[in-house]
Image 1 (cartoon, rainbow, N blue to C red):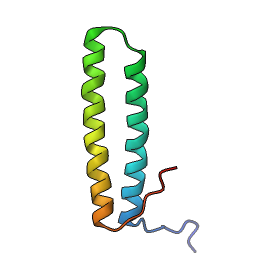
Image 2: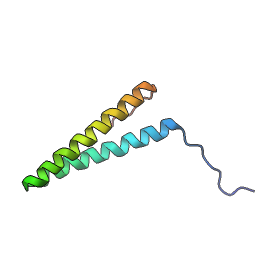
Image 3: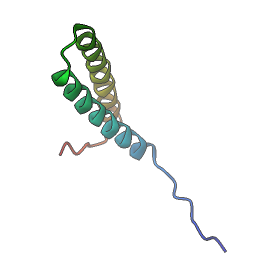
Image 4: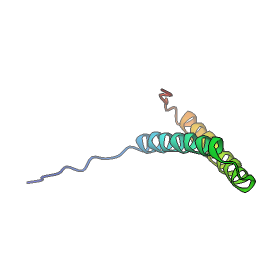
Length: 73
């Protein structure tokens, strides 16, 4: 008897989860940027925002190539 059944995780679900996590990271990066005043921290936030934006664009391209629709709400 199995108490817990293993649910197979689809690659599409993993990609959507990663897109959602990246979207949250981008929102956090924007929030950090709006709240820092030190020039070094401003530079750091800009680099972080650029990196996360590039990751987000990459993941969206992957989703489009796989014909996965993303709910942007």
